[in-house]
Image (cartoon, rainbow, N blue to C red):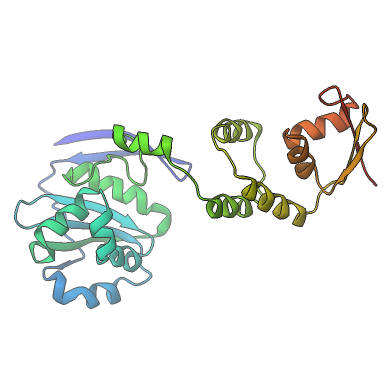
Length: 264
C-alpha cells in the first residue's frame, strides 16, 4: 500500500491529507450509476437537484474517465446536456461525449457531501483515480493549465465593444480596490482606446454617481469650468481621477496651468 501526503488550499482553507493509492482492499463504490444516459436524463436531473457531490464520467469504449464536482449537481449536469457547450467547449470530456455519444458513457455519483468540502472530496478522487480527461490536477482551479499561443494572441488583440465597456463601467460601481489592484487595472487600460461616443457615455454614467464637485481655473486664460465629479474633471483635463484628487489636496497647479478646488 502506498501513501501520498499532500497539502491543499481550497477556499482559503489549508488541508493536510494522506491519500491511500492503489488500495484494492477499499474499492470505490458509487452511490449510484447511470448506465443509459440518454434514457435516464430526466432521472439524473431530478435525482440530483440541490445536491452537492462528486461525479465521474466513464467512457465504456476506452475506460477513460473524468472526475468533477458541483454544489448543485443538477445544474452541472444540465451543462453536459447542452449542445452549445458540447460544440464550443475545449474541455476533453465535452469533446469525448460529442465524439462517442452518450450511449458510450456511464455516469457515476461517487458521493454526496456538503458544499464546504466538495472540492476536497473531488481532489481525493482525482488523486486516486487519475482520470484521463482531467487536464488539471487540482480541483476547482486553473493551476497547471496553459493557454495555447493562438489563444494568448487572441487575448492580446481582442477588442471590446462600446456596449461591453459601458457594462464594465456599471459593474464596477461601488467596488473597493487595493492600491495593487488599481495599479494592475491601470496598466491594462493603457492599451484600450475609447471612442468619443464611449467617453461621452462613460461621462454620463459618472455623473449619476455621487461625487465631489470640482472647480477648475485656467490661470493663464482665467477661464473657469465646473465638473460634477472628480472623474469628469479627469476626463475633461485628460488626466486620471487620482491626479485631480492629488491636485486638490496638495494645492499644486496641475500641468502648470490648472488650479483645482473643491466646489461647495
